[in-house]
Image 1: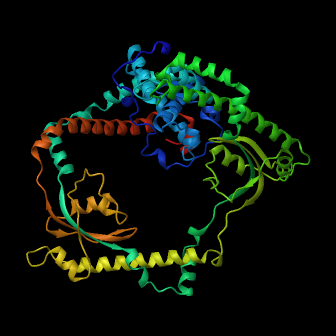
Image 2: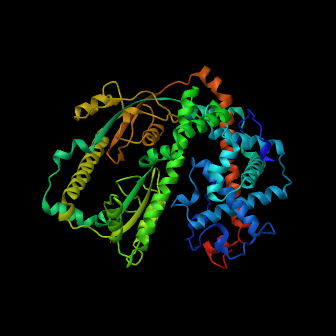
Image 3: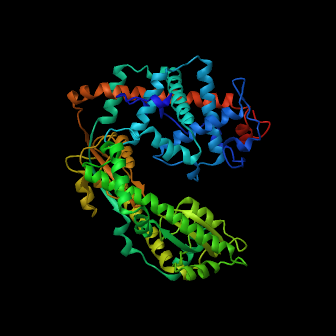
Length: 555
């Protein structure tokens, strides 16, 4: 069916990504006890029941595949298994939520038309293209789905089930949309009424010179904050990098100039300008096609060279880490050494999660890994050393500890100054303005541009305070009064609200229809998510993931 996708102007795909990775009110409290490698494989064939329907292996696998595709679209091209915070328990929980929603939609008799499924699928593909052109379906399957073992049917199921769940959301959350225009007007005024305010910052940088540093104080600070100086488990590896750029010349020679030109011309004749995103002229399009063909051939040569090298390394006996250097010297390759690195990867280059996982999996008995694919290279690595978690001695990090101590003391001095000033300020009067009181105490207030609760940026704050802190202080402070002293990571601030500016009525009337629609969507989502929380804690009790979270006898 998807093979007949047509172009549609209505961008429905945005509505299907409404609330993935639902956070449950109760479920988040349980510890993770699930293991296994993927999806439902760890539940041993017993998938439980939902609404009296027994979940099968096929049900679970299809829902899991759909969740993977949904996550890929939402994250901008990242798969769930690349996210270390998305544990196996969380993944299974989201799959069961999806199963619950699909079963509920089925019980309610919710259906979607094939034409709407086509529309959604086509708009999803358009979202991946450029200049309004959809990514060809064949390319999406080849580049995105197939490398993860997914099929065209999985994509079709994802589009269909997402539409079903969107209709379910509309049905369940309908009460949240019942907002009269008058209530919307009040909410608009609350969010968009602007404040005229002055602010005085108390920055730690202004107090650094006042901090007295003594060896005893630094040592005590180090003792008090030992945990923050602990280094995680680290590993250091030798590596040989097979860079794609080093194989482009060989790729061109292997293809042959005449053959390469004919392949470029054939590809351009087949796809034209529309098949080459970003190209504006035939010459530019052909240059991009040429580059792509060379890179494809270079990648083949690179993999071949990396595999041959790795095979020779693995064949050396006995297996010792320095075999990497021995073979590299024979082959004329350069061996490099990373600095010790933790889970964030080496600092020398942007390593893939597979590289980091392989590096931490090395042992003296199995000291090699690779070839491991990176962004533009493949790597063969050997264990250099493993460094367990440790806390450096004070002498090793004395300069760092001293800087931390100075900053902490400067923050405390800034906060003390701000607290003292806040206690001495009186209300703003003709004789005692906020500015005059601050200046008399030696502080210089700053006039902020008008802002509201809906403001998203206030450059004048720089690094001194978070915008939300300032908005909260303004909303809680009556006009003509100064706020309490508000602590920040930099020190803190005091805000004086001079006045609340009148609402621009014409602007409000023009914006109200769109604001009301957005408010109704927000309330609908709130109502739906509340329903999901309650429904999940009732209907998912007879599932492995629920029992894993709360124990076999949980109710």
